[in-house]
Length: 375
Image 1 (cartoon, rainbow, N blue to C red):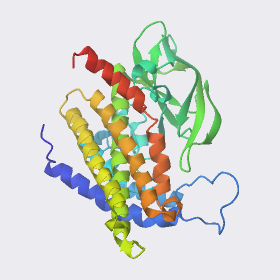
Image 2: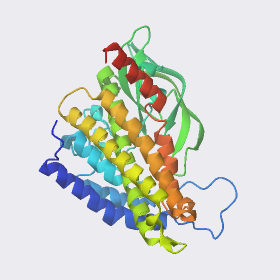
Image 3: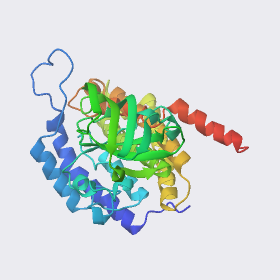
Image 4: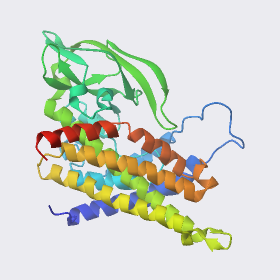
């Protein structure tokens, strides 16, 4: 395994780093700053980017190849490998500003919607809620059947993050069989119902999606079981990469604060407890980085990488949660202030630990495979 980045990968990493440093982080303070002089009662208002600003950022990201990363150029994407994709999402993870390249799986490339999704005219949500616990496609309970008028899809309910999207991409298992399919369903299609919408955190919403769809066109099936597994693994790598970015920002900020903050006549960085916390975080960040890059490298080499992606996601998401906790402790009262990114990172990392395979479930499944293989 060659873990040296190619010249192209280094260029992509540096381009993403410059974009985040120049376009996103300088805007973070204004976005996070509380507008009211006092915290209003009740749940905090949902934070959204200004529409004009978001459109401008999208155009800039598209111009430098940081958009629709998995789609081919013919569909308006960048068509880059998983290592490059990980490097990009890692850089975008360094800011609490809710802006990053959209997750548009390669399976959609031949769809009639691919160009509109890449151009930002349509939004896509991955309705993979049933796989969140185990990270396995065997958890899928949406049923499909092929009829004379098209596909029929049925589900008694699942949670979808980002229900405001125009299209939902979801896996379904054949009724009476075991074949898996990957389907695109429009939010406004007959038989699609949304209910119980609520804020998941300050930046995302969640709703309950039920399906009783009839006559779904044949071309809305965009893949089979392999495509379903690839979407899960790709999302696990995206979460792992974003987790690395969160941890990098937390570590850098904590180191700077510890050096500059003086208490009782001594800088925080001179205290052994602080040194241990930062050292543990630095080691955990390095190990998570290698796990994630190894999984991405295997994907680019055409090797099996699904277990590797699950392990990388599990370790990196937990590490990001611990990194945010460390940053909050070292920054003291500043750590929990909403004007700083650490409390936002803390909430996001907690959520990412629950998506596409919870830690205990990943341990159990991979442990079973190791045991079966005699390892």
